[in-house]
Image (cartoon, rainbow, N blue to C red):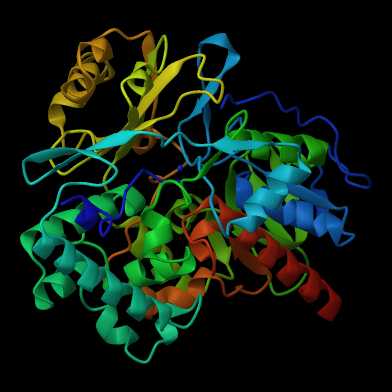
Length: 489
């Protein structure tokens, strides 16, 4: 029944994961010396040139600290945001791309840098394929009982999330229990129908790149609480998939790095960090040594395993990083098929496909804001679909899969662009589905400084965890910690 459809949440792929741009690392901050046999002396060294690291550096400079250097391992900035080139000078995002209501920190940063936004396209009907039933419309075709069961449990989960200590779920009175079971176990204990369980599988694959059977209930509750709720996380129009950036999301980082100038050093991964009891912190790269009063590591927890912390790493932080790195995650590919026009719009379709059956997790209209090209973007995992393990196979099979929904016109493509995050040398995945036990055993280590080493990154954010907004907020927090620490020393 049509009215019952409004009890179901429309879904789309998310944001936390461009053309690389050209950013020279030629000029150094004033007072910073460099020679092949001489260490660079700097007040604060930021490791990571994504949104979190660039936000940290920008805020430190606003606080009056000019001696800041950002080290980025890649030869580009942006971290898990990446613009991929399209014909005609357009781009499509290979990682995180959307923002929505409440995500005011990333919105403010973009506005300050002159990066505009435009409405993502959701006009028209979408396709839904759940438990073998294909329906078309605003929301999927469901029975009264299915709508009631899903809404009942979605409301319960939202109520539980609302009662968590904001940003510190491990402090909840029942945190131990919530972190000892998965979302799937909780749904089963609550008598969820098979349809509801499948619906939540779609949700978690979309927003967390993982299955309910592997995701800690406490992490899921924290994730939706920090993002503004389950409805905000799942909705397209007026939700967290509401707006896109003109020029692509990576443009925010590119412009931020340009403003920082020679303070951003590209292609310089950190080898080791030594926070000794006396003297400055020693940070070694393949190019030389840096001596810093403070260090901010603005990276996903698992990615910090690449750095040898010679001293100053707490047992709890080490435990957090090792557990995080050992997680089972879906290797995510974001694949965009290019067409001459967004032909589906003429048929009254918005380009969305939500399914528990297709090899494609989600499909959505990702065309340029002027619709001069048509782009359908899909999320998929080669681990789930071995037949699409190679680029050649994906280029052939994905248009065939799209033609199931959009007809034969979907077969006539101009090509494709994609980002396979499982093969990225500097990111262990794009989105994190945290499993049982990690938050309660090591959650505080997400943010707690260790000596003079501070932590930033979207996973550490109290608000916007997993999203671009959370990355920016984490940088603002880390900058305040560094500034206050400098005042106290």
